[in-house]
Image (cartoon, rainbow, N blue to C red; front, side):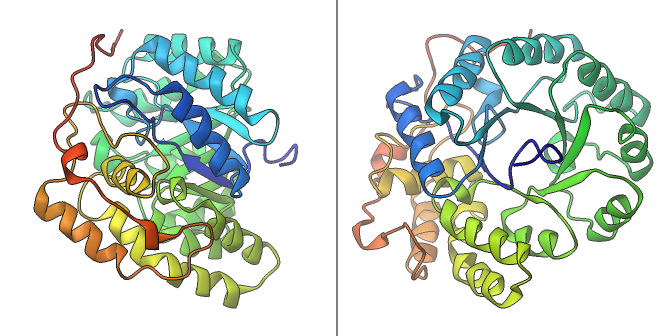
Length: 324
């Protein structure tokens, strides 16, 4: 990490480990954060989509930043994701996150409201104005309903706190245009496209599969940094069936927790409703993909023991998440 890049390059979109009844498993959170840092992550995004931000309470979100900072101990940056589709609420959350030590914030396009580009521009600007932290814009129209258009990104790039974009839109020609015309950094927000993003000048990744296997992403990024495309490509190909297992059949959060639990790395695969664990046929597809995974550093699938019963259904926590 440098003054030019305050986020790192290998960022994990962290799952939030939970108990079987859907409460945050704080000891498991600490262990999981330490595990991924030891395996090569230099940034952790807590309370993002993968962290089930929509069903976390505000106190849980702030506590995740605090725990992340404590466990990281300077070894990795802690970025807070999520935010809100209400601008005032997003500002409040990010101010509180900054107060407890977040190293950066990731602002998602307001979802469900379907604002115009003028509304998106204003939302991002007001949130960025309210903090001194470096900002990553999160462009994921498949979840939010609206893209951040090219012209809007160019305007946002002029804001002194907005330094990067997490791209889950997959328009590589647009990424190239923005990289050519601004100083923004790009982070791949699609696990299958990490190497293509890096190949056209992206800085790094914010990955779901990195919860399970950060080390190969460290290898890919380091190889690209030194111009070794052969090594990066070989690692990309080795990761491909695992990425397919995590990202294809059920939401990435659900699959990542199912696999982490099968590896014995978290105590429960539970997710909060309306997410549910994989159905029998979905679990079978995930396990079929896992059978194709070979030779990934730091992951031993010989001891993979998936538990479909433990993953079934979803939890209804005692305290509801908040939108205000």
